[in-house]
Amino acid sequence: MALLPILCYPDPRLHTVAKPVQDVDARIKALVADMLETMYDANGIGLAATQVDVHERLVVIDISEQRNQPLVLINPEITWASPDRQVSDEGCLSVPGIYDGVERSAAIKVTALDGEGRSRKLEAQGILAVCIQHEMDHLLGKVFVEYLSPLKRNRIKTKMLKARRETERA
Ligand code: K1U
Ligand code: ZN
Image (cartoon, rainbow, N blue to C red; front, side):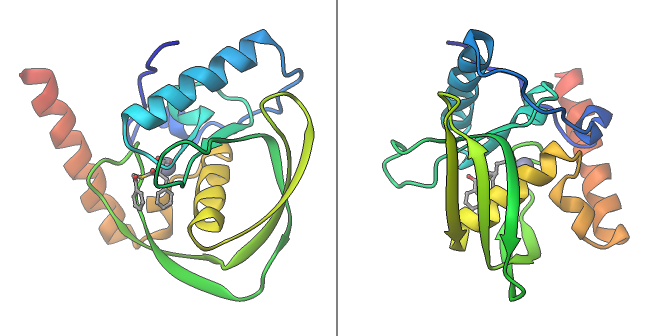
């Protein structure tokens, strides 16, 4: 297993649209293991393959307190989204230190393959629904800051670029 580097906003690779996974083979299983290790190490509750510069439709999630209930969604599709929407504070491992409110469907139904390539259906609400929608946005090349105002987004971009320059200089 290995820790994978996480792309940081505004890296243009975060805007790549992911392609479907063709086969849940040994390469994908190794990627799932590495992504879970990377997500747990970063104290995240989710991670999309896009964030580790792999442009295939795969996300990992774990919203459990004990960090022992991994959820692997391969080629996820939202089959139903509730018309009622709610605003929740979101963060992103690709935009460290930034949290802001985003409006999304309060409940969703999703189909996907699991880490063994088996078909799964699930219904989600609360933080799980928020996290799945956030991760699926990554697969479409969308970062949550794109829901914020241009003013906020530009401030975040400037802050991230400054932090990157300071890291490079150190
Ligand atoms: O996609 C990511 O970068 C992971 C992201 C998932 C996420 C968190 C909160 C709302 C929507 C999506 C994170 O894990 S950010 C860091 C984090 O652990 C966290 C932040 C806010 C609430 C709970 C957890
Ligand atoms: Zn994110």
